[in-house]
Length: 275
Ligand code: C2E
Ligand code: CA
Ligand code: CA
Ligand code: CA
Image (cartoon, rainbow, N blue to C red; front, side, top):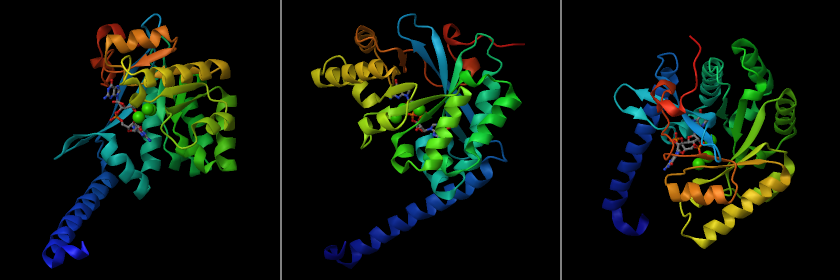
């Protein structure tokens, strides 16, 4: 900005100010959004690749902002992580998702995303255990999705929390596999139940031979390590057929359903709900 002369620098500063102002106001709104009940959990089915039947539903957080409309998590989760609001928000999602899943008579699981910050909480294990107790959801019906950022910090606390959750029967999935810095070493640091293959690989199927090679390798790695594999972002029948041919265990994507309140999913994808 220096070489551009004063005029440009000032304009640049103004837009920076504006961005900062917007972030501040989003942060303030976020602080009040929970008590104002502006959050919703949407669900996206994850289907068995052979039977096409949903085995679980991923809980995806949505913020219904009074002026901005439905705000996607990509634009407020990072803000919540920085402000610390993610702690309360994360607990709310977990409670909401487990209590809804407890009413699914057909027995599907629910997958909840956990942010790396939530693992700094020494009480995380107790919080999960108490939500399961309160909602009556069997631990085996809860799956927690974590990204490699959780393992990069890999403190003793994080590993012991993960081990205790697993010992209780909760399943742990590695999310966005292949996009982090240490994908393979993270597979050795913890025995995951499931690997989620990132959409960036799936979207180039079946055309790209590189993408095919990478996805096939991840599926085989999963099989050898005793982990199931889920392909994210499946949008076309061709992608689904290709993944099925590779024996990827489960598929998730707009081809089956977009995330929505459970009652709004297509009827073939809805769980049976207790009256
Ligand atoms: P993610 O965990 O990788 O979730 C999958 C994202 O892919 C979701 O975006 C989903 O709507 C989108 N998606 C699913 N199928 C398709 C498809 O076929 N095509 C395309 N283009 N996209 C597809 P969403 O809901 O916007 O969530 C974005 C991210 O926000 C999530 O990525 C996750 O990292 C985070 N997130 C969402 N809910 C929570 C939450 O409750 N807690 C935390 N910590 N993070 C959350
Ligand atoms: Ca996820
Ligand atoms: Ca993912
Ligand atoms: Ca992703």
